[in-house]
Figure 1 (tube, one colour):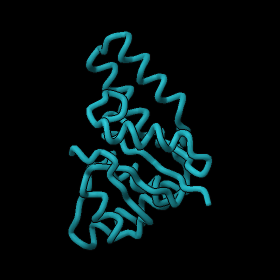
Figure 2 (figure 1 turned 180 degrees about the vertical axis):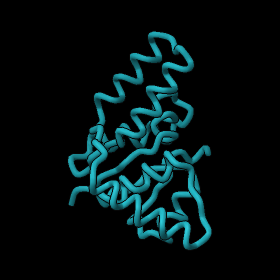
Figure 3 (figure 1 turned 90 degrees about the vertical axis):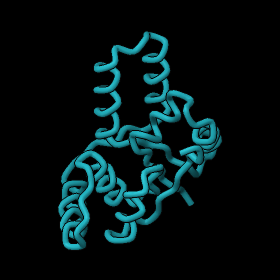
Length: 143
C-alpha cells in the first residue's frame, strides 16, 4: 500500500537546513521506501523560493534546497484543490477557526490527494479534526 506524504513548508525547511535531524532522518528513510511517495505542494515551493530570494542565501545553501526539490514530487494546484479549499475553509470558519492563508492552501492540497500531511504546526491537527484530513504527522520532534 502506497502512502503519500505531503511536507508543509516548515518541515521542508527543517529538512533542508538540518534544524531537525529527526525530520531529516525520517525523510532519508522514506526516500528508500518504495511504498512512500514524498511530495510538496507548489505552494510550498513558492514559499521556499520566496525565502531564498528574500534572504539572498549562499550558493551552497541554494544548491542544497534545489537538491531537495529534485528528490520530491512538486504537485500542481488545480480545481480539485480549490474545491477542497472552499469546503475546508467554510467548515473551519463555521467552527470559529481561522488558518493562515498558505497553511490553508497546503492543508487543502493534502485533503484533495488524501495525503499524510507532515507538519509540526498544531493547527493542522485542528484541520484534520474539523475537515477530515486523513492524517497528520510531525517528523520534527525537536519542535
